[in-house]
Image 1 (cartoon, rainbow, N blue to C red):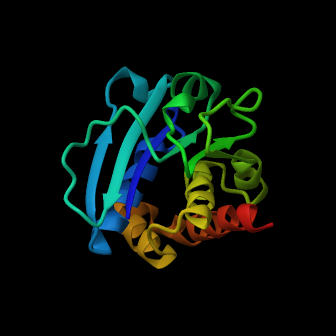
Image 2: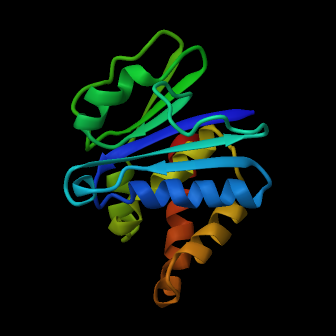
Length: 181
């Protein structure tokens, strides 16, 4: 199994955190992992991105130009990266409120729209958008387990924010339910 995932959206949407949580969870489950974030001015308001590779085999390079999956949270990310998802069996997951129109993709790529922003707001956790999105992704591509994700989140979050863990777990589950319903 090798999953080559690109996550991209506005700075502040939790893009880099989502990648870090997923990478740590995969590492804890014994997979080979690469986490390659984009730092700099992109983090605050611009388009931020991170590449996460999860594999059962050694990873030769963290730098990719095509991906097996992409999570794209804004129109700028779709415009730039939608055609970088390769088929067959590729996956493009996009946020309905953040993206105008339906992304055009390569043949064999599954396109899934989720209303993660609305879901996060509905459960009273707008800052947990990234956990809703991660839950939706994991419902489609279960590369790591929910329990491992929550342990990784607890490890990454500063202790002063540990009170938000139950709400983040709910956001993760709600994201999974978005796909199942």
